[in-house]
Image 1 (cartoon, rainbow, N blue to C red):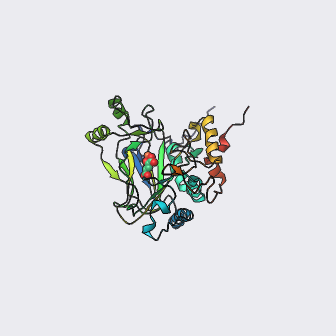
Image 2 (cartoon, helix red, strand yellow):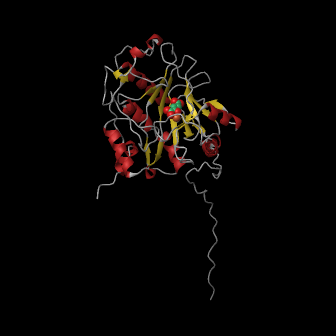
Image 3 (cartoon, rainbow, N blue to C red):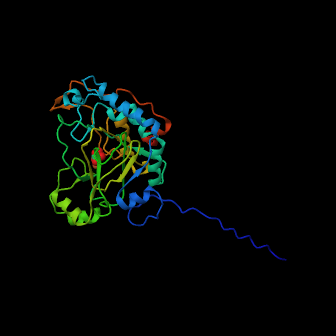
Length: 340
Ligand SMILES: O=C(O)CCC(=O)C(=O)O
Ligand SMILES: [Fe+2]
């Protein structure tokens, strides 16, 4: 009796994709992930569809005009603190529940943005940060100076690639336009940097997930061959960077306002139940977080102008968001386990 040999079939299998490690062990992907691994940042073109970008920019301007303080997007002389809600010198609008405005949530829910983060983490169960939004006005005559604030958004005690940050530009960001500036390659040197600098005096940080570079730190980066690049991107592009990458933002020197929405996601599996509960509290109260989606730190809505309560106070967004099922998952709320 003869037994038939099983037919040998060769099936081509795609390489198993795994979470990016950004430690020299990642395979080449032939896409923007290779740039992220090498440079510490990358650009994902057209993450917001071109036909939607202008509408988002319009809603972002309308939010400011809707405060009724006199700001008018078509009149540069109205770029004045008296005519605007409280926005800091770096362009951040933190309070007035602005981080939960409907257009901000609509951008956070854009499928191509979410997909970029799914690709990096190889995980579809993600949570999103409730970040500030950024107005980098062109006419800065009446605004305080935005001086360099080089930093990384990660605790030096916790090395390795832990969090991917992102932002979407709603206007083009050319060489003269304001926006993100990064120290290329500094992510891979972060561990060595902190070993060398551990005894140096630190710039005070309000969260452990932040480290500010001193003059000595900047010199170290330069001596180790890291150069600073102003990231150029078009309206609708998503810029992502490793939290370890040294960065800050620069004011515009052109006549184009910078309009940016921060979009940072991480796997819900990397957040504790306690963090998810705190995040739910932040959502319910319509307050913000940092770039870290796990809501280790949450913000507040009370706006203060020169140390005193602003005449305008908002605890709910001007326009409440309508969350899709996907967007609601990004709040982390559906992942909270019922108490036993
Ligand atoms: O506005 C930017 O481009 C960067 C903002 C930033 O680095 C931060 O808020 O930590
Ligand atoms: Fe940052």
